[in-house]
Length: 265
Image 1 (cartoon, helix red, strand yellow):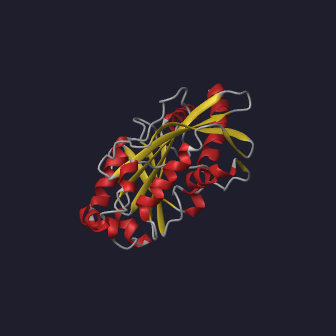
Image 2 (cartoon, helix red, strand yellow):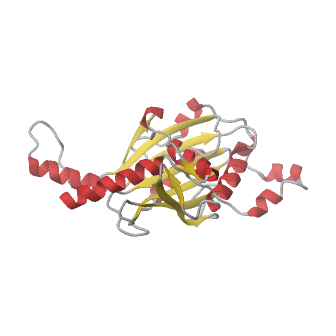
Image 3 (tube, one colour):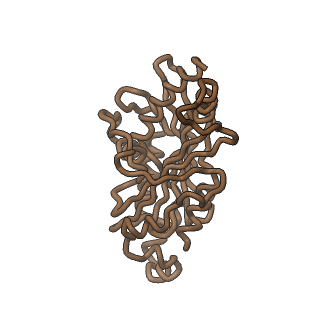
């Protein structure tokens, strides 16, 4: 248990840096190039939601996941108070937008954002109260450490819109696949897929963040997905405190598909 808690402390530090880091988005370059010539025709082909005014925070709240929407997950509202503190020095500075996106669960400069936290429900975990034994507390802690925790952000955009923000974020991610530092801690974007399965959305990008600890060991403790549906970006950050190797932590497909379905109306 002590070894797990020690490793968890390291992973938690990586997560704090990651949540003060960035998230990404993807698609293919063809869509960006198509805006020049047949703009009127392409506008007719786009979903109405993509051309609409940005949704308000109240409208986003109605479309965000809530408790009971996804079996096997506990879903709660989150607020700006739950966000990680903004990190200090980011080097090179070109990776700052990635770091800021991870910290806020929103790429770019959204007109409105709402947040959710989700966690897998461990089966058989005892309820904790004043009568909880030390053994039950240890078991609950083990279950909590082993569960994947997901921060979700829904954002709408003015100006270039969600599609433009996603395209820009994709480029920023590609520029940070090499090592960069956040408050002196080495980070890198890994496993970047710029045209990931949309899972009910219009386009998506997925990636992971790898942190190097003080002993030089890489900690693959987080995975990210950004899905666009119309003028809304759904940002997912999954964290596991017990990930041992690349691929151990994934953004749950059930959460993504349920959220894009609600955005589709």
